[in-house]
Length: 441
Ligand code: CMC
Image (cartoon, rainbow, N blue to C red; front, side, top):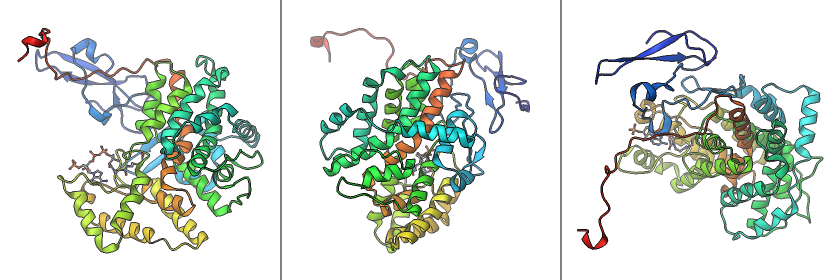
């Protein structure tokens, strides 16, 4: 392989030569370079020229699109939103600034931020008819099941924002999704408790408003502590986007057929639900509760290393990070702040820190480069804030909505966009005749 030069993606200055050992023919494939990260071999002509597909289960070596939104260097533990390090954004930015950055590509001026925030604020209320959807669910439904259904149902309500060829429609749909997700999430929670829904308040910021809708009742207001509001803002920022993960790729794939934007986000929510993705922080808490005491940690670490045991250390390991997940570092700090503010002595935090210490000294985790990920500490913070574990993934979905809509918009605007249609390595039976039921052996 020649050394590729940095170039705008799409340009092909160098190439990758494949030799077909079946006939000795060679195929030249261009190599593309982005602004950061590994170069990519452009295999678009491969099938036409060789008759072969590439095979990559889980897409571990596949770049599925060109994107300008988020960059991750998993070896160095770097995460950038539009070039800005996540640590700086988590420390200094407001969530609305980060939403604007992800959607429009630049941090907003004060005027742009004020207008954007006002716009989002004035979209937070739901069509009143949507309240009936909640009432159709069992009270003990998992809130992610409710989210999938209600967010999908938005497609039946907001017809003035579903012409995906119109950029204005796309932006209105995007703003609506960012604005309405906390309202839907809080309603799902209230419904599970049997409490009346609490309407959004326009005088509150995004994080505060979400906590107000979750915890206020018509009988009593909820006063949001600044430390908890800051923790919520950080959690939202840390989860806002993460390039082409499973749920984002699901949104892109669903959207590639020209599907309704609200339905595409519902598809993303479904993908996020799994314990290997957004469901991991709920699973971390369950695991810590199951471990229960320090003396049982070695037993669980042993189980995590045993190939014959399906148990994994939840909140550990990542497809991309082979170093500390930079989000986990911010989470750990926030966790101490929140517990300090609340004066909570949380035995699970001590258990988590000891588990982290033991795992990071263990050869298995060191060799496989398994470090704590964003979910390892977030569950402890959320629980201390009074958020039940069934709502953890819902909160992740609220935060990730801006990433999903930013990526969805980018996909629609991409001139190279096609319907997503992977191929396969077929290993089933070859063609064979139908045999009448009485003649089958
Ligand atoms: N505990 C024990 N072993 C592990 C773990 C773990 N948490 N994670 C990976 N491994 C092992 C795995 O068994 C495999 O070993 P071997 O090479 O001997 O077969 C090796 O490490 C590589 O793992 P993999 O499953 O091939 O890696 P992946 O990139 O497909 O999976 C992952 C990434 C996040 C699904 C996985 O690390 C995992 O299941 N972690 C626990 C769940 C979790 O915390 N998920 C949250 C991810 S961060 C939030 C998000 O972005 O959605």
